[in-house]
Image (cartoon, rainbow, N blue to C red; front, side):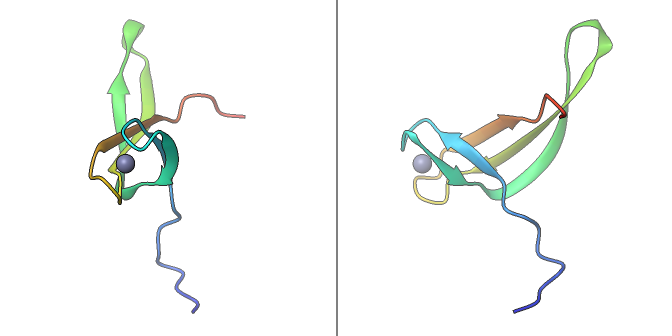
Amino acid sequence: MADATKPEPVTGYCVKCKTKREMKDAKEVTMKGKGGKTRMAMTGTCPVCGTKMFRIMGNKK
Ligand SMILES: [Zn+2]
C-alpha cells in the first residue's frame, strides 16, 4: 500500500498499560507555558485501554 496521506504514527507512554504505544487519534496541540512560551505536544488515546495519552514534543534536535 502506498498511502501517502496517512499520518505517521505517534508513540506515547500509556500509564495504564505501562508501556509505549502508538497513539490513536493523535493530535498536535500547543500549550502555553511560563513566560509566554509555546510548546508543541501531542495528545491521543491508547488503542488498547482508551486512556488519554500525552507527549510533549519539547526538544528539537
Ligand atoms: Zn493503555
